[in-house]
Length: 399
Image (tube, rainbow, N blue to C red; front, side, top):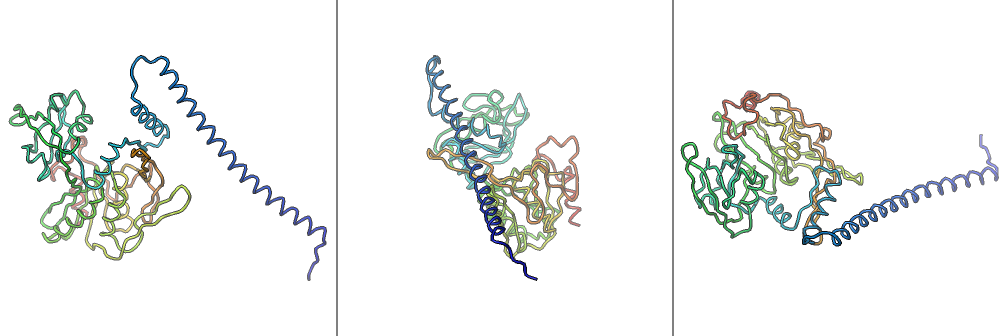
């Protein structure tokens, strides 16, 4: 049965619809306006604070000021104030160094090092890059860098000492190293800094048929290095693989997705959720490596390295062995500023192919194995295969 609506009722309905539309529009506009006011108030507050500081310094400070240093410090403080623990402000020089390192290159002498508390603190050389200034200048694995330009490493501290060894291409750095019995022999060495290729992948054969691949970090060249390592290991007779991402801090998204694309079948590699709500999916092609695999992880396995192990776990391609990972599931972008400085800031959260975001949670291994208590604080480079309980568990998991 059809019912007719009176003209009066129709007008009421239309008026109500118009009023509802107006209210929704007003609320949205009001919210946007309030946001503009808040942003303006915040900018005014920052500007006023800096202006007041500058006025007091100019009126009372007896020293000289470096405007560029002040500007860099202000920018650094602003970024620190965000509360984003992965955010960073980089000066033009720091940004240039970052770009070089992320492309698989750095300026230095070509050594890998660790801190050693010998004689108050030294830098222990664990690897010398072939063809590097370090090799050509006579640096040896096992040397202890004791002084840099005459200053004791124990006084400078580890981070400052490492930064001092780096520098501009073509400049010299003078080092005093300790070597020989009980490292009692002092040797003076001079190196000319140069651009050195950073190798992120090392590999070897274990037990005749297991290819062991250590990934130190992910940069733009890691995928190519990884493929070359896998090809060489297969030629040497490897039929099973152990990938070691313990102490791997992560790194370049392209580096890890290229590496995973080589291993995984067709399907998603990573799902990225951005601030505006849209999701980006990066996928693998149909080519894959069909072989038993295990992945070694620990509490320092972070970011892209966690994506690496969780993706292999999601596809049931590998058994994860070790302890729960760090738990960094946010993605940072580098935004270049007008003076060639840069801002590194968190811009998205990402998820493995099929499982949930692990930020603040970590990735739980399939087989939980601790290192012996007396080896937990020892560098993995110094632990033998027989001592490495996690490596031995991975070998057992491969069958």
